[in-house]
Image (cartoon, rainbow, N blue to C red):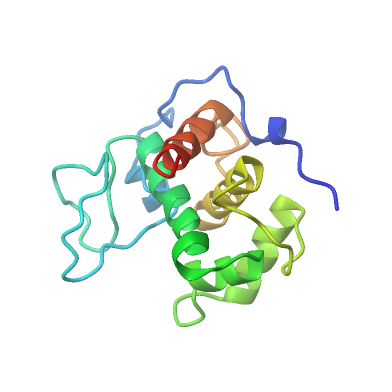
Length: 175
């Protein structure tokens, strides 16, 4: 099984913020909210994420101050799937992330596996191995938000440096 080349995830020479040329309103909600995993706000949960915006303009989804902090929250959630729920295969992780009650889980799993070049039953140690965590994080971002527009500065929503910074911040939480 080949592991996708991490250098294809983005262009390191771009700024940390996802900046469209023509404003933000045409962008997917997850990109506008700096919540590229589309983490939902849970009713009755008063947990404050690190980097969560002080204002709550979106009643359904979390909002973050920067893409890095939204990526951190996504990666930290994936790490917790392994640590707290004992989920170790791509299929198990995606079944929890994108439950059939809310998503076409089969299509979601196929999309993520295709992007990561993983098999659904492939074992991933998201709490111990950086590369699989980074790849799954980016694949989820891609599935949640679609492909960036043709005039976007890179082929992914965020440059590799931003993805790495967000995932590193999540892994430091468990170091």
